[in-house]
Image (spheres, rainbow, N blue to C red):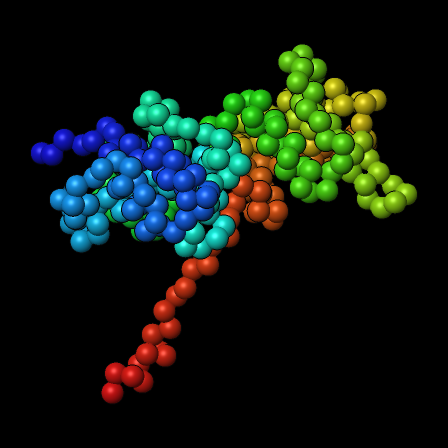
Length: 289
């Protein structure tokens, strides 16, 4: 039985990819980046000619995976097809092997949570043998996994960004640990004459938010805002939903994991749209005769 890998060979190219792009003026074609790395690292022809079982060039595939991890980390911009480009962070980031390996482990864990049928070792093995384009990760599952992997402070701050993208103004995170469950506040302008002060709470949950938690949040809201929002990566119990909409009480807007994903998708916050083509077999039938 073949021993599964606990690390990937392509990690060693994280730093060289950044270095190569800097030398190329912060942008470059894949072939240019590979050639620059080969030149700087004095790679032999024998090494550069190695192929995977699929026939794909091994070195070029490893560099492609290095690029993918750097994109996930926000060091490369993938918005222009066929061109690799450093982001502002990427231009100012240098990675030695230790830093690259730490980055690698972070994203392997995120991917493993998104692809629950795969172990970390199996994911690494897949990446060693296949190109980034052939391995798909469900966007919804991956987004929630990424959000759950954030620190509590990080989740609060990304919720702040999300509300801003949805036209909230003056959005701030309180940064206080004992503020009655209030994590931040903002203003939502309905029209030039009407606006609401809103407070929000962020719960990076696996499970469900309970009725009592909604009630406690409302009590903290009284006298401080006209409306409240609870955002969670989890769900809400039926009793929590009833409490949020209880007649005669200030309304609480509930945003569960599914709605949270939809909100991110609507404004494309941290997400890039991808076009997928399906073959129209009927079109090709007439050319078989």
